[in-house]
Image (cartoon, rainbow, N blue to C red; front, side):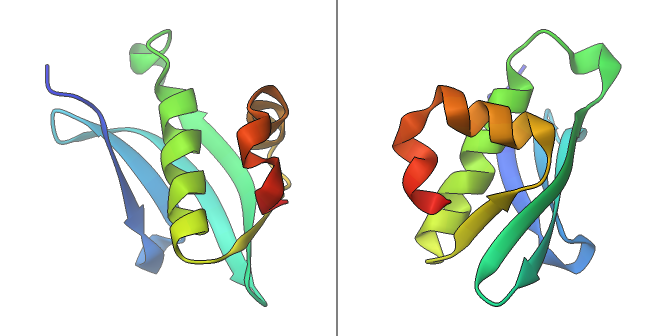
Length: 92
């Protein structure tokens, strides 16, 4: 198994985490006035328990930071993840 990779799919308004080139999870978002609003995050059941949700959140938030965007975590998972990782609170 290769290391998971997070990719942005702007045409689909989501980030995907890939495991061996297979989509294991998604973080859906919408862009509005320089803010990336995360609306829903999911990891496929068969990929559960591997920390992929956290890796997906980290990758998506790192991408938002690199693009100079603010973040609005409407998704409960992303909101909770940021609360546990205060180094990302500056994006709010």
